[in-house]
Image (cartoon, rainbow, N blue to C red; front, side, top):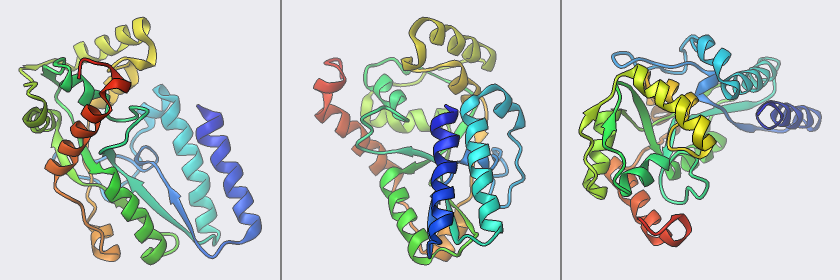
Length: 245
């Protein structure tokens, strides 16, 4: 985790420091920025508030350290523009980095939800946003690239329109965390849920992307299009992911 998410990033930034680039777009992590709440989405000025998560989740700690190094370089004058994608969905997720729950819904397994929520954005819009960071972004500035703030109940019901898998049950947070812990023991990280993802699911990760829209001219497509295209992509590639879908 640290070798890929911290050491590799730091080594690359050190190499860039030597060649003195005109501009760098850094793909940063919301886990290094902080999080918002259901009634108060975070923007780029949010004070870091994920210390408890970073102590439990090595990935978060590594991203915080790597991005912190990039922040320091920006303060010293390196022309870095920071793009912070929220939770990316869309076609082409061959490694199931964020779409595992979509497969679960397509296979009829996603019958529950938990009291939490995330900001969902189309990966194609994020790609456009990063391009705009290079084209229009100001050095040293941070730009949140988020789409729609949704509770998990809202997200799963939106997905239900395309998968016909209706979420019926609200599961207590404690039960979700225990299920994540147990699933990780039995199935490893390839499970639909592991302990770390359970911790994240039980919180609200809401964000405000007005700055990117205002300064970069960035726009996001309708949520319906993102979910429809995601499901369609998995159906087209069903032989790769299993015949159930």
